Image 1 (cartoon, rainbow, N blue to C red):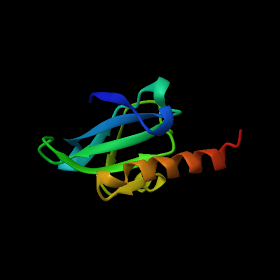
Image 2 (image 1 turned 90 degrees about the vertical axis):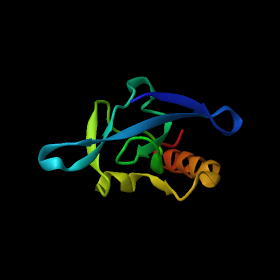
Image 3 (image 1 turned 135 degrees about the horizontal axis):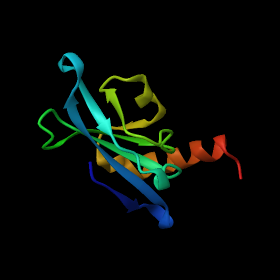
Length: 109
């Protein structure tokens, strides 16, 4: 799915990935996510689409993308716990700041 890089506070770049819902084996619904290798080190926002893939179901912010190749996850997959769910986009800046803080604490400069 298409993605883009969004500028955040003070020039920080944030990768934005859109996970579309696909039916997999036994009609299990999963988000299909296509990471962009050169953006895996950036704070990443995952925007998950609804069943019809016409509107957003939810948003999560991650300190980085820990996977390099396409992957599928269920809507309740434990991998989503790496990120911070956004109840709405009004808290996007705070979530990005927290993700940056988490990233710095894991990898001090």
